[in-house]
Image 1 (cartoon, helix red, strand yellow):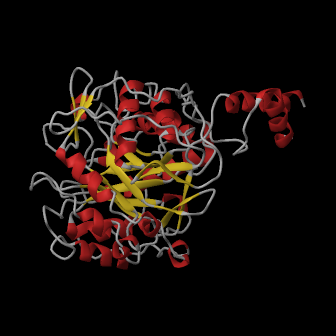
Image 2: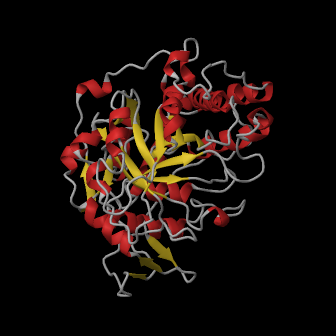
Image 3: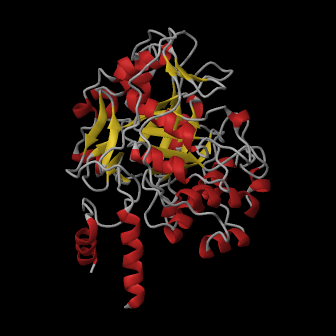
Amino acid sequence: MIASYGRLLTAVCALASTAAAVAPLEVKGKDFVNSKTNDRFQIIGVDYQPGGESGFSSKNDPLSNGDICLRDAALMQRLGLNTIRVYNLDPNLNHDKCASIFNAAGIYMILDVNSPLSNGALNRGKPWTSYNDKYYEQVFGVIEAFKTFNNVLGFFAGNEVINEDATYSTPKYVRAVVRDMKEYISKHADRDIPVGYSAADVRDILMDTANYFECELKNSTSSRADFFGLNSYSWCGDSNFEKSGYDTLTEDFSNATLPIFFSEYGCNKVKPRKFTEVQALYGKEMTQAFSGGLVYEWTEEDNKYGIIKAEKDGSVKTLVDYDNFRSELNKLDMKQVMASNGTQTSVKPKTCSPDIIVDKKFYNAWDLPEAPSKVSDMINKGLSDAPSGKWVKVEATTIPNKVIDKDGKTISDVKFEILSTDTSNSPSTRSGTSSSSSESSSNAAVPNGPPSLALGGVGGLFMLLASLL
């Protein structure tokens, strides 16, 4: 009994200093849904890699600097975003502040588990040489670092691993990584965090790639991907639904049985980018096949895809692409965007078989490699001595950074807003769309525990204890 009260006291202490913003998302059929309200969720996001790949190291990654995260989260709130994707993470760094900040902002995170550092990714040319315990220290390390946070939408097991340069058997190794990640999560996380794959838009093998990860494999259902991302840049300038090939993609994925979304989009062959594809992506036709997308990318790097420019002195300039993207997002009918129907959540996957693979050059067997013995030990026992993330208090609402627009004029309305419980950020509003009636708090974090309970001194403490007993 003493132990039980100890756990209760721990929960009380955590909840007394924190409050939840977003509710965890789940996968139902071809939709992401809010686990508390069962409402459909559409990704409206951006790929977040400040500094690019060259800015990543064992001492710094995109989610290790709380001041930068606070600045960027405030600008993302102003834009109306609800999701970020982060490519490169070092599991040994502390990400608690950034994860808690994005949670408080009503912004979910999709995290890649691979990195460009040594032993950080599968070798697409010889995957069997890198499918080992050293690689899984990175993979499981990222899971350990972020499994606590309810605003983790999911993990990417790979990004464009399967392409023209990949060896024939690469797909089975990537699907094995999906399996191993899902088994690790089932044993060591408090919820089933979705795991998926991000594919290049190589049309010759795109549907074969999707079918390979989407189908259900007898005796190994845990290896099936939970979602599928597509990096597509086919809509350039003032294109349209047909010219861009969006009509073909929509038809191809109309019968998908898992959530499909653009994990990268935003062609920059025509500058400035107008983002007119936003109206198509979130229109009635495409939302029956797609679950939104993430614009590439947040900060301006050498490749000229950024929508903001971060200066060395900490100041920020919003580029014309930022304004154009914001303008298009503010035109959206969010009620229609988030609408769903019962058939989307009740679809069932096909059984894996060679006849679902069309291209003869694409791997058409599901003889997945067994996890190496050391990796199996990690799955069963957990990754020893791995840093595990925890919620921290978020109080700051004013960002110290100077923000200017494309014309050099100061933007004065940039302020970080801590959203109320179970709320995600959305376009056209600073406060997002709430899915519960709980009030806003000056702090933000831990979603686990009894929701919507205001703690008020000793009375609130006893109310919480009573609700838990």
